[in-house]
Image (cartoon, rainbow, N blue to C red; front, side):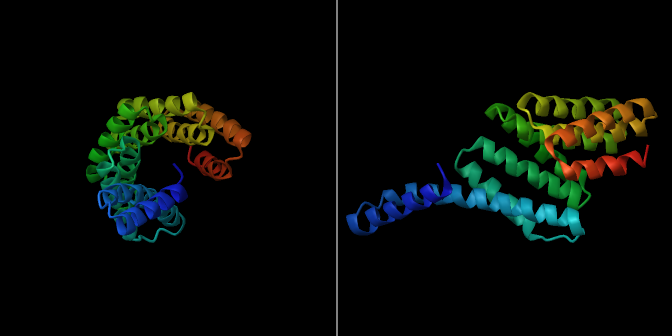
Length: 213
């Protein structure tokens, strides 16, 4: 159901309670608005995260929004939404605060919930960042397996910008482990895919990656 439809439904339920005397309608109205608030909180948090990546200025409201979304989705028994919100909580800790240890359990829970819900896109994000955690810990074989899984999940659902981004990560890992030929191969494939789908931002990542291998 679209957010505007949920708001209209909540308005109807309010009138049913207020003028029709059916106060049992209030609980349903709350759930409709919780779903709207959860979606808005999650998307606002994502916008703040992109702003952080652009200017590297932390906004503490980002975590507040993701935690609120996770709370509401959990209350709504929405595993897909909760998995997405938990991933972003983990991402805040790992990327904004450089605290992978705190972020990791959120990625693990996100992956498990997304797997239950059949949400391969969120699975791909969670396992990607678990791969980064393994790389940070120096467990390169495990990191490669997780990053490869992320790319495979994205290929399965046709998420081409995500495939290209995943190949960039594999390129960096290959370069770091001394396999320059594999690194160049990953970046060449990433470039072809990014050009195909118009992922200009990823093309910038590829250009920067080529200067480091």
